[in-house]
Image (cartoon, rainbow over all chains, first blue to last red; front, side):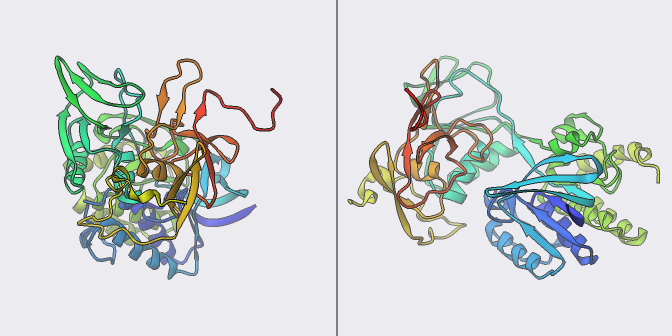
Length: 320
Length: 118
């Protein structure tokens, strides 16, 4: 079985930050992603900007540009291996990761594993939600910005909050019409024969050809729970999340979770979390960890700071 | 083969320009067929993107109700966009890239393997 020092699952901003931090420490680092490119949501959530206070030496700019810069940064480390088009489908005892790509399957054993697996769109059902033309916000962003195809020209957006606003901004740049926005599934239905044609809100009917469900995202830390990490539903973090110590380590020793997978975060927050987890997983000393924790506290918003505070309660999870 | 790019519906769905992303980069076109009809696709893009750009939003019909399904999650999770590709059933078209000469078919219900007994 192949062994590495630090394996990171998910090459979005948090995972890249973790991989860079680990690789800088000189340890053998493996970064895994199921897609063909590094960058994760930088490719579809393009209106976010990465500022240098996130601590990464890259220019600010549209996500795909930042992702390309990060990719060449990753390539500059000879002790860092990138496995793209590779799904990490299991995390077993003793930090053994099960990997699969189109023509290859293997297990990799790591001293430390960092899960930066991101988030999944929340999709509450409503009448008509299965019609072609109804899609998640992430699907809409992926088709618009990665594949460069318009799912429709007359849009409805279901949901309210940051994700719905972000998508509305994305659509405004695509020369399409936002016909209606609605906050919740109450009194809401989609209709059409074979394909979305209308949304109905109480007695009002709107003619649309695309409907995005933008009800927010939930943390996706399935691998941590498969490895039996303890966790709880934490509303402020967006869903069911693993308990973590200050560095992002779960109740399973050597298994870390960082970024959106640990609770929905802003871009600087998840980069700072990735860096911290990367350093901790690579065995950095107290002074370096304190500095990385300080950086995270600087960029974290109030909600995040409170959640980080609360995680102190779980310090006793891993007596060392 | 005719260039399928000359229909307004198609031109209308390709995002050729974008203020943050710039012009759509040129890539090698590939030709695929969907239910026997030829369509042009961009090399490397997923099947579902090529279909959507060509105005096709329906991927399959449900086994019992017959209801249509199309792209929902767009990232390989939900299985709504399954189609028959080169004779293989249940292919996730949103994460499977097009290749030259690929044969894509709408999947009705559970579909049927080409070499299976009737």
